[in-house]
Structure formats: structure tokens, C-alpha cells
Amino acid sequence: MQLILPKPIFSKLMRAVVEFDMIQDGDKILIGLSGGKDSQLLAYALATLRLRIQKKFTLSAVTINPLFDENFSANAAALKNFCAELEIPYQIHEVDIASAINSRPDKSPCFTCAYFRRAAINRIANQTSANKVAYAHHLDDAVETFFMSLLSSGQLTTFTPTTYLSRSNLTVIRPLVYLREYQITSFAAKNFNIVKSPCPLDGKTNRQNIKNLIVDLGKSFPDLFDHLAAAMRENSIGELWRAPKTLAEMRQTYFSYVSRR
Image (cartoon, rainbow, N blue to C red; front, side, top):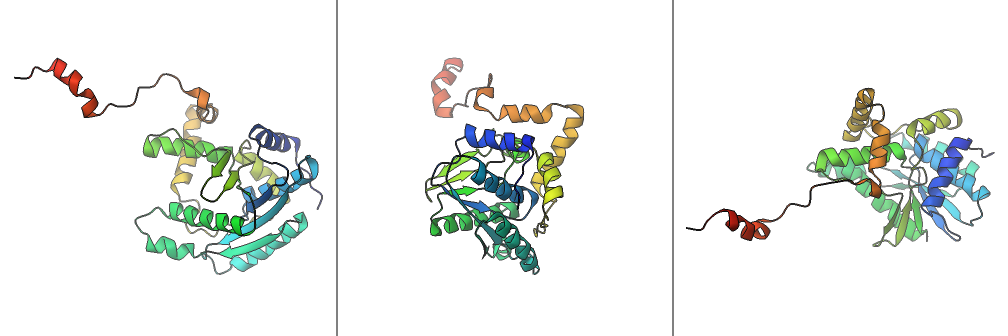
């Protein structure tokens, strides 16, 4: 397979890799490959970097079968061929996430699914001596996470481009974090056979609601997405209220206002 990335995609890929120092000599990177447009571009992009940058690193990929779909094996065959063309060792690992979700009705299905997927991938990374795990999160994912956190928990937080996991001694990298989803969609439509998500809630999640909300608000505030992306940066914080004081901390001041009789 001839590996060619359009300049706008390659430039943003390189910016993320260089700015956050994602790849070093000797790295063994395990790719979380779902088969969707994002993860296929991730595998393709890292295979391209393996040829073009002056870092010596190896790649492997794993697909988690969550046992949502009985026809999963057909999709897995396509991914196996895809990875073979990229010369990336590939494996499939079954995790009964469907049963886990059914047994935990008090938890969000998306939370349960993500938890078990990450745990399985981290375990496989350790078993295969990988020191890094690569995920295909892009800029839209980061902005949506940031906005969702604000609306659902009142916190300003999102995932970081690189994250060290002390428990598993792994570093998570997200090389696509500067790419917009529309860029990925456009490239993937012309170059990949996209595997449809087996998730029964695909397109019906809270994240999808946030995605739709950003689009709707963007009609009235055209710069909304760019402003949310800028707000994720540490240097974006302006004047904010200080953290609330406890009753114990306010006790002395309180009695200076209210006489004790």
C-alpha cells in the first residue's frame, strides 16, 4: 500500500506529535483499532510516520470485540487485511461488554463500555511489552468532552493529548488531536472501508447530543467551536470566583456580622 496523507492532515498530525513529544526511539505502540474512520486513519497515519520520521518505533493493533454483534467476524476480517497491508501485527480480543452493561444498570452504558475497553487494551499492551497506547480521539472529541464536562459536572476538563498511566506504566497518545472530524471523514470516505459500529446506542448517546448542540449553537455563534477549543488551554483562564469556603472557614467572619446574645 502506498501511504500518502494530504498536506493539511499530515501537518496537523506532525504538529501534535512534535508539540506533545508523542513518539521516541524504541517505542512499541499498540493502536486501539475499532474499524471506524478515526481509528483507521490513526493506523494509516502512524504507519506513514513510521516511514517518514527519524524515530524508530514499532506498531501493533488490537480490536476489542464487545460481543454486541454476531456478525463481528466479517468486519474483523476486513480489519485484518487492512492491517496486513500496513504491515501492522493485528489481533482481536473478546470482552463481554454487552453482559457487563446489562449487569450494571446503575452505570452509564458508555462509561461501562469505555472502562472495559481501556482495561483490556492496557492489559494487552502490558502482555505484548508495548509502552504506549494510541487512540484516535480528534479535536471535535476533545471539544465535546470539554463542553459536556461543563454542562454535566460544572468542571472545565477534557482529555490530554498525552497521558501517563502510572498503574499500568503506559503512556496514552492521541496523534489526531489537531484534526477536525470533517477532515477525517473526507479522507476516510475515499480511502477506507469503514466498519459500522456494533454499538446498539450508536448515534443516540449523550455525546451525540452534545455534538448536535454545538452545531446548533454554532448557527448563532459561528466562532463557538474555535472558542471552546481555545478555552481548553491552561492560559485561557481569566477572572473566576475563588473556591467556596467551608462553614468552619467562615465561622469567625460570620460572628463579626451577627452578634452573639
